Image 1 (tube, rainbow over the protein chains, first blue to last red):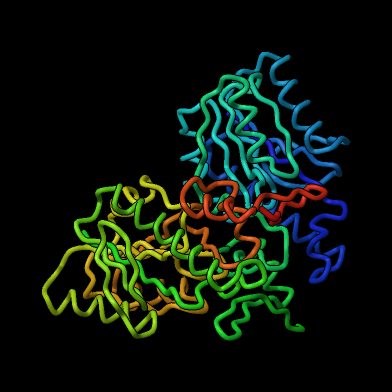
Image 2: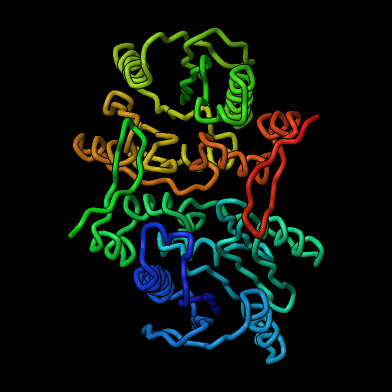
Length: 214
Length: 214
């Protein structure tokens, strides 16, 4: 069984620009990737873990695969290559910005008996897809990708399930999302934010993040 | 096994004021409550379903219990009454604004082997708590209630688990949250929003809600 994580380092997480500098955003994105990759490695669910990345990075126990194209093109080329090399093992496509993912989540999703298991992200996105037969599926990210992926599965005659998980559905894109890492996270991404002085603010029962000078 | 849903109709969902009138917010809150209550009834997990409400409402197959006090006071009085009447059955406290809850979610959480199962909401909230022995626990909502509930369980010597579900963690408080109902919902709350002209907008890959005149 394989896993693949697409990753973009340059100008990563641009919607966090109001809180983090360009360098901090890259480091933060990398810390989330390390959390996700580390959980994949520890789970021992996968014989191969590939990171499809736009620039060289250094992460242990995974394969670094340079990919110059866009997200959809890179992933569909990846799936196509598996098919053309007759690699018929299941594959988990998982985003690099869901650092709350747990080992149990990975055990559960890879145990799915459906042809495809789709994990919704917030705002209609897709945070992970487990595909039993990679040659039978293609991805279409951006916008309402969750509904598009359900439709792709249906159109290809595949039985799909919607995988229900707060951990996996919590993608980190905007300032408000940092709250979830600070409350529920215990990995590198949480540690990195705390090292920068981030903490929880609680004004009149409205929880948010604040950054204090260190 | 019991379930209790706290509900406030007057000036419900005030953070949706920019999108919905006062009357619409009340009707919308009621439609979400009906989704949650309907799923509880259909699940057949519960012999008693109580709605703790600040004003009279009409919902089938549940008990309407008028409660004039605040959320914490009402729920803690409810738990206290169970204890004083020697009602030692488990209870699920579930919020009225999580209309995506499924029958499977209810089966899973009520099958928990822990003393307490706590469901996080977004921004540190708590969307549901399953308590095996109601006399052993009290609630403390508002602010970072998730962490407070974990601490209450620990301080009382209880084994707790964190219940991981996108459906249950998706509480509807703000304009952006309506996207989740429109994409993932199929009940009364989704129908009500659509009847008001709400739909998904998708500008440059950023998904939101729009309201069209009907």
